[in-house]
Length: 367
Image (tube, rainbow, N blue to C red; front, side, top):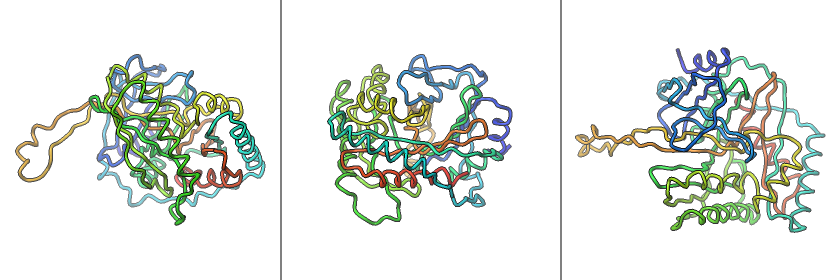
């Protein structure tokens, strides 16, 4: 069967699965659990796929590779040339706009009253939708966002989630940990320079990540800030790397999640403000997901003088977790598209609304 048919067949049978493509990977991977029980990860020595929610007190769902069928598809053999896209049109609700802008204004007031420095407010777009060809939607994600972690995740007891995330929460290879600070959003068509507000917002994320890592490690390396593209959007990005004691990885995850890029700063005060004021349950939006201890083949250089060494490619277990941004869920014939933005003391309500409208195009275009 083709990838598209495999996805549709699995979903129609209402059996759990995840299909995903990591940035620049040559393979698309598919994990098909043999059990429909909801499993949480017991320790980080297990191998499989983790899907974790935003709410720190809610349970994650883990698909262990030891109790699943594992499939791979060569990306070059998947026909993406014939994949077409929609315009991504959606009728904006005046009521939704008014509600969100009032929330932004309240948040700015809270910041000016020194309750917190930053909060990331979110909302969702809900619409009726008939899921005719889930496999085709994944092909659109693959074609549109090759530099993101694209995925479809389904469990009959939880629901269907899909998206394209450009943001790494944590990469762990041996004892080297890599993460990133990703903030600021604008269209690729916008030629203006980044504003002081956007640069300050991104620096807040960098500082908090570094501070959270200091409790469990030292010698933290911070890269220069750069502008990166994810689909039709641009972001500010700074990479952070360090070496850790692997037994502390779970503690480090707890300190990193949720990051200031999806929650706010200070974390606790912003987090509880969001729980009390957003007015809905984010569930897995702005949670994190990805591979835990999955084996990947690492080959040596393919230059001619190293050809004799190709037989000695090493197998390395690595963990690669992404923040669940640019995503949507589907249940009861309704699509929910999740969007949000960072609010600081300088935020303007209408501009913040427009930013969420731009971000919604990421998912609207693949439907």
